[in-house]
Amino acid sequence: MGPRALSDEVALSPSIEVEPSPGIQQNVTSAVLPDKPRELALDRFNRLEGLAVRSDGLLAAIGMPGEIVRFSFVGGDRATVAGGFASPLALAADDEHLWIADFGSTGGALWQLDARGGGRAQLDAIPRVGLTALALDRDAVYFTTSNDDRVIRVLKRPRPSGRLTVIARGLAGPMRLAADSTHVYVLALGKNPSGEGALVRVGKGGGDPEVLLSGLHNPADLALDDSHVYVSEGGPARTAPTPTCAPGKICPVPSSLPIVEEGRLLRVPKAGGTVQVLADKQIALGPIALDDKTVVLAKMGGLFRVPKTGKKANVWWTSRTHPASHLVVSGAVAFVYVTGELFRLGD
Image 1: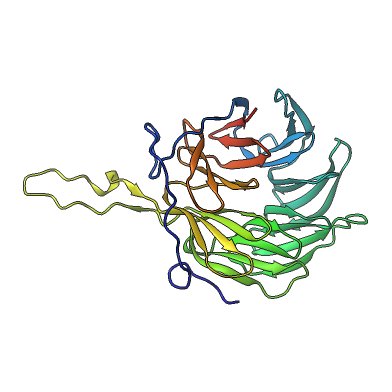
Image 2: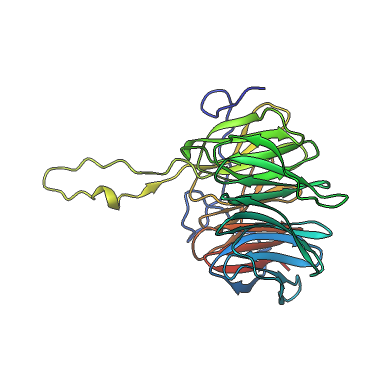
């Protein structure tokens, strides 16, 4: 299957329906749900780099001072799991271990930690490159490298050997990863973030990458369910056109004109076919997460629940500041990091 570009080969569905909600500054507004989640502020960090959920709590990778901390689901009690990392840039977790992509003065390293707070092992060091994203399946850990644009696999069992297998090269800025039973999906920024991003997948054993979607503008995040890949993109940021001014009138200077953003939330079928636009004309789209029926979308104004069918969207939580940079969802609970503060949302 060849690449699909939204500009020509993909049929677009209409924008989602929304209901107006006063006081929310955004291009598209929605009604606040009656079951607005309870908000609990957990902690403040200068640099949070990753979140992961396990049965025993929320795990957070803190870039400064280079540590992994755990928050309990009930009450949000904090405990340090491990420290001494140079700069952890990504975090993933399974039933037995935590996996940390670290970056120091000599390059990147992949670490494995016992999930119960025991020993750690450095699986491998990758000189002069950073590790920018992590994904897990039952058998392996996958990560991307920032300087040479590779996707690399490390087998977990019977014992992680640290042996690296490159399964893809030359993807031009791989920034997000996800894995299903057969493929690793890569969201790539592109050499020019405006219009050259792509959604690509590659077989877990390697092979030629398959471009599922091209022509993305400032791609932000991806998430998988059994049949689809969901992608958020920031869209081409630009200033509004300079207005025509009548003689003797004062016109706004270009630097004061509003920014027009055209971010979108896209639903891409794994088996091929029409790409559906679940939301468009959005400002500052960010991370996404899935539950059974909806896509939880972080954007300017807060968190939104968008049905996977692309019907009516609803505000789930209203943010008082900028869009979230990190988001994970576990059942009816979400954890979101916004401008230095980590929140737990839900009962």
